[in-house]
Length: 337
Image (cartoon, rainbow, N blue to C red):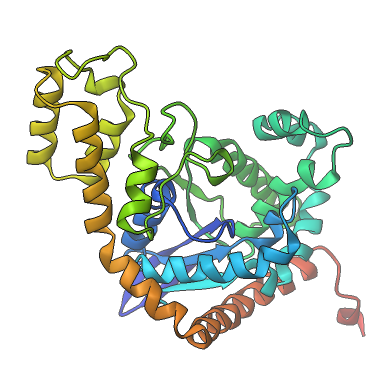
């Protein structure tokens, strides 16, 4: 399903983010920077997926605040409600109904083979059904808007392939209706955390906030792991194995990156100095975002209005999709009267 705007046909894109509160550097570099760029090229629907967030041990009392903070973050990094649709997943109940519809299509064996299910199920004494089924809700999140493309990281490719299989199976049984969405893979790769090994994640405590102040940013970045073989400042460094250099590469201009790389390999600049440059770049580059965040936090009624407008647009499309899916599946008894 595409949107025609200004005479140009734009593919529809869906992506979601969990309500973790303020976004961090990994969120921005790995996803949100791409979301901002995409809003001028595609008909973008961006969802704060709070129904996915309840699968786990998060505090329900903080979920509303985290949801609002995520909305503030999305607006502050440059998403424009005039160019994209921003909404909260639970505001569109059609997601859940379509998820149940897809439960009659998706094979249990496919769900059990999902890598994330295998990894996360080991944490439970009693595995909740939602852990097995949440990729079906992800498929519903995408297909309820008949999205044609989805930006995904490496850890989500398998889930998108399941969505594609569900669309094909449903279409085969009930007639061609749902697009088989394509993957849009960012060229950033997986953004490692400050520990240099695992994905940047708040739950792992290895992040740096893009809305943080100068002292807080430096306090986080000074702990970043660099080249483990470099003991003294004069030792030749290996930028290719240093995650701090990778973050420089993702943030900085090419001339600065070339200087940092040369100074590292020749041992003329130490790791602490390199971290200070990175810290300064984070503070300066995201200063406009911090200003916008303060603006939106001072007017949360505006944020509420924007989310509700996004909800209305999303529900209009979702209800049309669900109506057609119901009719094709025989869930329309009034049609014979």
